[in-house]
Image (cartoon, rainbow, N blue to C red; front, side, top):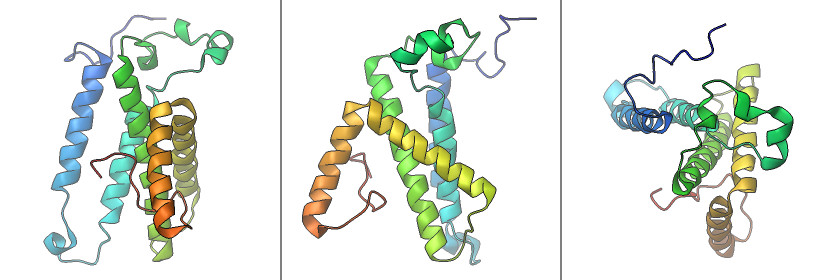
Length: 179
């Protein structure tokens, strides 16, 4: 069995991190170029573009989440061949960025499914349930393991709570300052 074959997707890049940054940039450009309702002239809900974008972001970043130290020895992830999560050259600030991206994506997916469900555009099929579960579990993982995500979430939630006194985590208060 070949254990050292390079990934053809990574061959143009010096690291998995630089590949991930490139894909993230291209996804963002795709999202910004997606047509609006006025552009299409049809009654298609463009929230589905946002949903697809955030699902792609969560898939892109989820594999970069670190394995908790208590499980590292049990699952032997350090022995996995060419695992992107094993590229531990990522800086601490990049790890925080990964947690923030995963938390934001998870939160947005949960909100979008809720909005689409409330207006009757989505049913909870097996695939939707899977996406909701993966978004929710990734969101909770990021909150649990990242003090930065927790601090932003708590500060945003506290400010939001002071304004309305009764909101859920699915309201529109973003984790990041850029909206």
